Length: 505
Image (cartoon, rainbow, N blue to C red; front, side, top):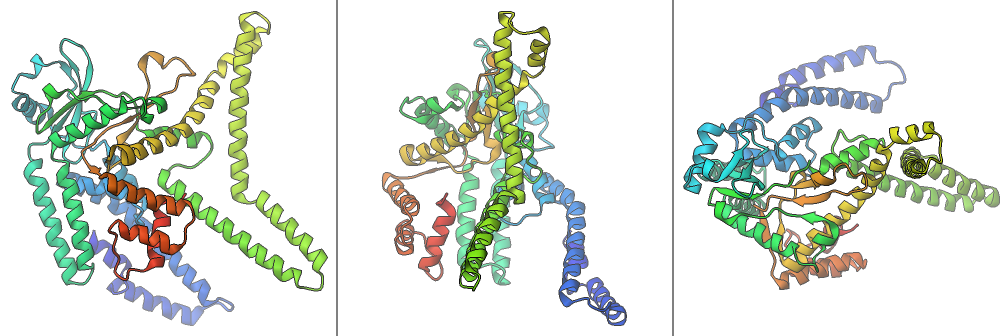
């Protein structure tokens, strides 16, 4: 794969050197009059973009399969790359998203999972569980999960089983990464101190996932805190699985089953219904929206500057009203505004249809409307569900922020790996047929957690408040320094901007 990219894209590749010489000769002999250097550079960029896209499409499946074959640490790496802010090509990112919760090529149930369960639980599985689904409901980097039913209580549960080889494979993989980083430092590819800190944190976090006993205790503590009526869980409809201590070991965790798809899938459905392209992932949608906001702000600034310049010209009155009018029309008829209006129109149409359906169905109960009206309302029954779901999705995002804020600032114990695969949309099976019932949010996987002391929580709160209150750079930077954050040049401006990037809304 490395050779493929080097041979087809590197400027030191013989293939690229040969084609560059050939292209230069062709340009020199047959360059069309009027063609600028800028035009030629744009053509080069476009050709290179097409070549890279072709290479990504060709090699992404290969890299994905290599990660699956190596397993363990490399699965986790794929999970991280699927949501990272780094410029990962979409062809790779799309493959890596699969690794968030549904890792293909899971371990065999009869030869690996069943023996592990019986060894850890010290009892035949049939004595504990009424039934176990052999096909996993989820598979990840170091283990997989199976749905089951407890014997006696008939309660549906999920059994999370760690792969037997994970306990030695993961440390070995981490050691390989450490050796590779040393080579990168020797060649000057990465900074030694930065790579050392990153490696230490990475290894500490990933090794923590092997400790199922610690994960069980984390989950129990967060679950018990969720039952407190003063916490936002009950009010916001956020639930966590309950742990069964008697069926947990160093390699097995048994917990209640939370039925439902990943939260990202629900958001994708709602965005798609509103005409928003979700192929590039939710993160890309947010980044594109932010980019458009920045561009709009820049355009407005440029228009304001243009208005100032025109205001200083002899035709002051005429120019000023034209500038103002063009700015207003430009804002109204921008491409983004058009899309926003379309989405708003679709929302209004859904809500109005839902209202009409409810009204007609109520009137039909008393035979106050024609049968054709009732048929129309019944055919559009799903509009009520769509309207309710659109409202719920927005509320769910606020609920997630409230709950994670409570974990950080009140409990001092929070999930350090809240990727989309760890958030579920939980629908009560008994209420699925009720169009007005709202699902709940399920939070799972507390293998990677962080704890903050009360003193540390105060420091984080002060930093966030200073950013929210638009404090000067010096104040924000000092709060960052109080948290122990160090940079190479200790730049006040950099620390302040970095803080705003992390926490400013």
